[in-house]
Image (cartoon, rainbow, N blue to C red; front, side, top):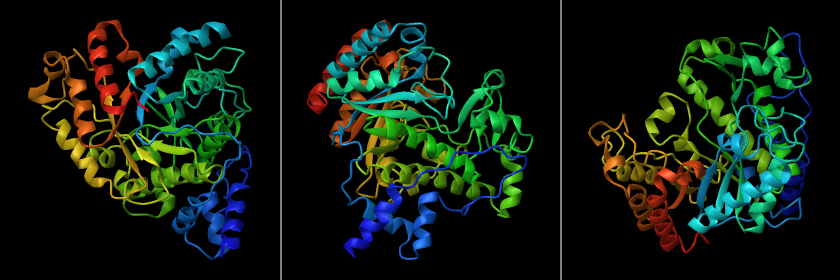
Length: 430
């Protein structure tokens, strides 16, 4: 039996995805569109169900890069967004960027942070060297930003999780300027895939997860990162379905012959998430995969079709969940304590880590959707510190959005108190 387990793992870990080719019409899939590539391989073996195979996969010790990964039992995370790159990366020399990002990482570490969610791909673009995605708007450098960030973070013993937005793409203007060799440009140019594989919503285009080729494209992008960079994890946030409009995927839904649009969309996102998970684990089981959905559980289903209940109760989807609980204690619709408890109640699978996502950008601002609690962030200067204390009492990890807002001059005093609370509660983030 052990030999069979090893054979299955080898087959999974040696899978390579063929590059997508331009089609004049919607392509016939070379594998079952209802299964990810890894799932199909397991299915063809005729021995195990995919979920059983994942459980076996998680018992296999493998590290293809021969590197030591840095991850922490008590994660203290912080998001580093692409927006910050405009001032520290665009037009900057390698030394200037390295110096700037090093200062930011040291500041985060001094606060007690031990895990960095670093924006690697925000709009179907890259802040790293990629053959799949074009360079991002703020990445006009000849050097490799992600490589530098990983090196600087690891020197400080900080964990690096490459943060990608799987579905959000560029604007019309940006897509038109891309080289025709990129897959996204091929889909944009093709009258059959423009409006199906990629769909325009407001100013941006979005990938449609209903198609297996699209999900494969997303997984290919993740594999490119973990094959070429010594990241400790992959992280995705709450950019799932961008709209509830039935026209977004009307053709694919019609072809599916399903009767319930909501359930079908939820299934598509589950397939995408599972495919990412399989891709990571078939390369290196030690690399973590985390998801950061919005904080309101019901909204995940009603607006983005994100099946957070399944992800937190079954194997094969993620290693940790970071709900964005950006609500005050007095928020009328989603009070902080009650919302945290609701997420704890969902967390029924022992291998899934719950990390509470907090924010600092609301400090000293009106929270217009909080009802009678709209002024709480203005009146209570120590609100976030109190939230951290509550999560510590409940033996939960935290992550803070974002570096830029946390270390802004406007809330420097609150930042100092927050740092003290984090370091006291989490032992310096170690």
